[in-house]
Each structure stands twice: as C-alpha cells, then as structure tokens.
Amino acid sequence: MGPLISCDDLLVTSSPQPPNEPTEPTGPTGHAHSGPGPASGHAHSHSHGPATPVSKHLRRVIAAVLIPFATAVFVGMVVLWPGGAPGHERTGVGFDRQTQQARVVSLERVDCASVNAAQVPPTGDDSTPQGREALAAQTGDCKKATVEIGTGPDRGRTFVEIVQPGAPRQLADGQEVVVAYAPDAPRDLQYSVIDVNRKFPMAVLAGIFAVVVVLVGRMRGLFALIALVVSFGVLMLFILPAILQGSNPLVVAVVGASAIMLIALYMCHGLTARTSVAVIGTLVSLLLIGLLGSLFIDWAFLSGNTDDNTGLIHGLYPNIDMSGLLLAGVIIGSLGVLDDVTVTQTSAVWELHHADPEMGPRGLYRAGIRIGRDHIASVVNTLVLAYAGAALPLLLLFSIANSSMGSVANSELVAAEIVRTLVGSIGLVASVPVTTALAALVVSADRPGSATGAGAGAGAGASGPARGGRGRRRRKR
Image (cartoon, rainbow, N blue to C red):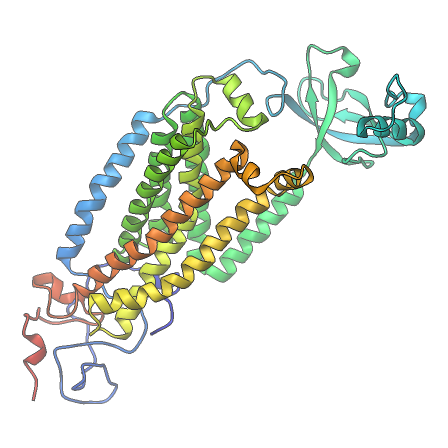
C-alpha cells in the first residue's frame, strides 16, 4: 500500500488528462517504465500523484445525488435565515449582563475587618464552609482595587473592588478586567469585576495556531483555516440566531451542519469524486445520528434543561425546544470527527486502488475496513475522554457525594452526556463501513476498460483515443 495522500495532492479535479499529452510506454505488466518496451492497454504509473479521475458516467451519478442535496441545503438556509438574533430586555443574570472593559489603576492592601469584607454568621458557627470563609475574610488582608471603566457611556469613571484573600480570582495592578453593569443598583454598586480580560493571550495563541497550520499544511492548511472561519460564520450567523428566532433546532442543525460539511470538505479537499464520496458517507452517518438521537432523547425523557445556562435560555426564550437543542448539539458536535473519519477512509481506499489496480471492490473493502478498525478504536476513545474531561468537575461532585455509578448515570445531567457520547460514537463507527463500501464501489468501477467514451480517460496517465472494453488484449503477444 502506498502512503496516504497529502492534502496538497487532493487539489485536483476529476477531469481526465488532455489527450495531447505524451505518455510513457508501458511494459507487458501494464506498469510505466522509463525505458522502451512493448506497449500495453493498461497504463499505470508507479508515481503517487493525484488520484485517478473517475469516469464521466460516475461523475454524473455522484452529481445526481449531491446537486439536489446541495440545492436543498441552500433553499433551507434561505427559508430559515433569521436576519439576526431577536432582541430582549437584559435580566442582569449570568451571561445576560451588560459588560464593559476596564483596568485596575491602583491596588493596596487593607485589613479585611476595616472594609467589612465578610460577615461572620450571627451564631458564630464556623463549622460550615461559609462560616469558615467569612471568619478567614474578617481576619486576613484584603486587596482594595481601584478600577477605571474603559468603554461605554461611563468611560473614565472609577469604582472600588474589594478582593478577599481566599477569592479564586486575584487582581494585579494594571490588569485588564471585565466588569458588569447593574443600572438599577445604587451608584457605588453599579459596577463589579466579573472576569479578567484574556483577549490578547487568546489572540496570540490563535495566531500561533494559524501559523503552524499554514507552515505544515501549506495551501491546504490555508484553505482549512478559511473553512474554519466559514464554519464559525454559519454557526454564529445562521444556526444560533435561527434557533433563537424559534425555528426547529433539529431542522436548523441539519441544514447548518450540511452547509458546513459541504463548504469545509470541498474547500479543504478539492472538488473531486473522492471528496464527494466522503460527503455522502458523512451525510448517511449524520442521518443515523439524528434518528438515534431523536429516539433515545425522547425515550430517556431528556428535557435538555440541565443547568443554569440552559435554564436561563429557557427563561428568556420559552418557545425554544430544549430537547431539540440537545439533539442539535449532538449532530453538530459529531460533524467534525465524522469529517475526519470519512475523508481518511476514502483516501485509504483510493490509495489501495492506486497501489493495486487489479484489486476488486471486495478486496478494497476488506483492506480498507482493516484500516478503519484502528481508526474506530482511537476515535471512540477520544470522544469518551473528551466528554469526560469536560464533565470532570461534575464527576468530582458526584464522587464527593459518594453516589453510585447507577445514580450518577441516571441523573439527567450525566445521562444527556452519555446519550450524546454513545449516539455520536455509533454514527462514527457506522461511517467507517459505509464510507469504505462507497469508496470501494466507486473507485473499482473505473478500472481501465470499464468506461466508455470520455470515461476511458480515467487512467492517471491516459491519453490518445478512447479504448474499448478489450483494450487490454489489443497489444498482447
């Protein structure tokens, strides 16, 4: 088997080579040689260049499937296009607060008792965590920070923020911070520090990521970054506002995920039959994930309203179907890994055919599925660990409470993640045989001599007049 094709190798179309290009003579075995030898009807080069283009007939079949699908996605986006998120009156709770940028202009240490940083419980009970924290705050040294507002109508205004010694977020002189604004509070209490400003280090990290991707991936890496920006654009400009406008979250997720899939795959991997096969395999797997997710979310009575954030969303927009929002998250979350699996499997089958053009669809499928099994094992493990890492604080709370595994799994907060993980994993596992079978059928159907007319140009170095079905035996001695 030849090496897997690089991203740069995929930047080709599926059109055959021009008929006037010279080709190397081929030996009796059908492989290209640098020296003279008897010609053969089977032209195959040892060089691992672009994938062999498929015949015009198969291109028409693939187009007949993908063009109506792409048209339906485009029409769906036009019909569901929200035109922006709906406005609402801010509640001042959680993420729904008015915020401004600010900076710490001075910092001094003061006695916590002198600024009344915390009140000891009236009973003097310090056996509870709250009581112990209040007692420590009364006896320790606090920080008195003067913060200057840098944006908004109150730019230049200052206020004082008291930071207790045991607070998880400590402030430093000159530090950029984010402050919340409560217009209904007394003037001295209208502003408070809620977070630090991390925009600069995040921007530097994003810049390093972009540079690394372009240096390693070259033009393919640049196209991948552009596709990433487009994907975020579809998410922020279409999917989220459309859900907030009251559209069905499942329909919005399917249309948006399909648009992301089409744009990202073709932009990153080229407008080729190989990419089209990966798109079809991804689509089939997404449909399976949607069906299974809908079934088990309803069967397990998962409401999707599991924490403060989802509760706030439901309070602000009661018409949003929260269980549908959960299913939409399952579909969108599975899309990125699905792309990786389907593209890898399709490329593997194409390279297997390139290494041994005589291998039939059954042999290609068996060889490709052996590669896919290794991919399945690593991807499923990655998904489970990713979800477990994201839910680690929650799992720690259950561990502290000495809850059994059964009670932990039965809680909706954990059950929703279990359903999300298992449904996504089933779709990923199913994508391997589906995509491998499609790729094997497509690439093996275009062996030299099997196409007619323009399809005879399917060979990597095919030229001259089109050969018929008996082209292999024409020069046999």
